[in-house]
Length: 234
Image (cartoon, rainbow, N blue to C red; front, side, top):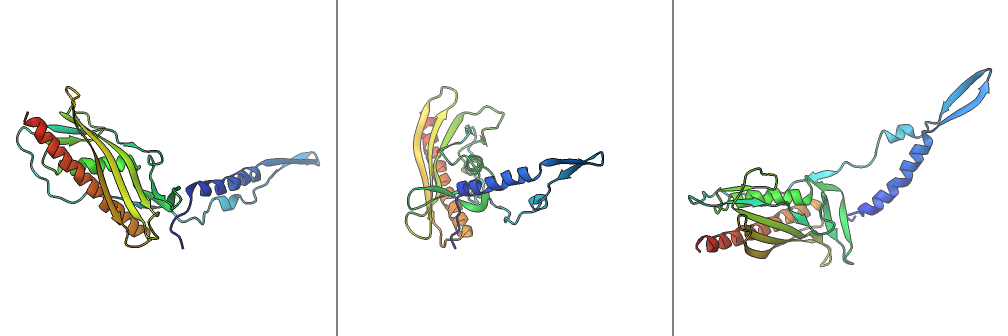
């Protein structure tokens, strides 16, 4: 049994059921009988709308790689991670897969605990906090000014079925690091991570997503350290 199902097709199948339910709930005024008008409610099928046989969605959470927090050096600068941007189709909480004919699809009855950009932003902030390069790290909602700014653009975040029956997860992040005060660009780079699922099961796919994401975020932390060291030594 395949573990994925087209979300768009599911939506199309739901539409006729919704239309039938609306038409079934209309009231019809029956002819007058004995000076009284009877209201007949066509409620057939309404009771079935209160129950669904569809399995509830399973929600999955990714976590940053566990690491002891490294104390920043005295006088280390602060960092803000901007609102994470995404390629088309990734600004949602669905778990994305790509079929062999390059069609984007989603795993059925499953989703991330938050939209992909928010989840990646939170993981990136946690990774940068434990890197030891920054005195403080804030996400895009932070209220305090910072010295540096990191912009992340998600280009790929998908389980790829083009290479075989067991998918391979690809995470590709375009990153830009700059100084906030004078808007000087320090570095621009691509952080990547990939991991093969050991089976075509969703639990294995999610584990591969976490591994690939952690690898990409570790690359961001290392690039950030190198760029900051070069900038602060000038």
